[in-house]
Length: 280
Image (cartoon, rainbow, N blue to C red; front, side):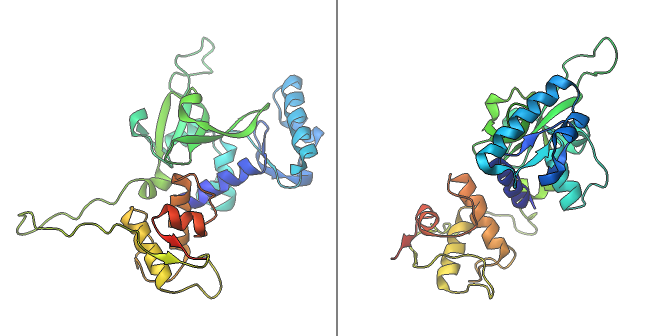
């Protein structure tokens, strides 16, 4: 599900989605000037949000963009699309769904936060509470966030965001952390191990992708072996020679980590990046 979440975030980035206070995925005719004014915290903020929205519409994104605030960007996926969370929550509520991390331990799939560093005099802001959230989407630790009214949904490096708290969401923990090794039993004397497969030396002459019926063949199995050799698992069946959804997810993950177009299709650039040969 983590790969699906990241694909969804990348889609909002491509579609030039906008920031509106309290928004959670509204689209098309739902977004109007009056609606933005009713959502926003001040006339000035409403004007900023409207100006950015109109600019994106003029650029041709009016039919595909959505409106979010920072937590709404995750909540639309978790609540509206997947039903994992049953009610809306804030950035601080999402922080409570995370295992806290040190910055050095942040990985693809983790969430990053801005939190208050002290209590406010009026008691409305408490030290450690989160007021903004972003989502780490690749191995380079780039973060997608609904940044603000003047910027909408953006992607930028982790170091650029001013984040001061980091968390591993419980929903994606199994996808982020590698499986623990089996506990040894009996004789624990180290045994000779075969070297890992290099994952290269294979040929592909067609784009491998999800189709109906599913694509099958030795080239699929070779691609799967190359992915598995690089720790991109292809599901419980491993290199079974069938290009199913787990293989497509592994391809997307590999593409994301290697700055390729993330589309789940193994074409020339993906095959050669994996050490294979593209045969015209």
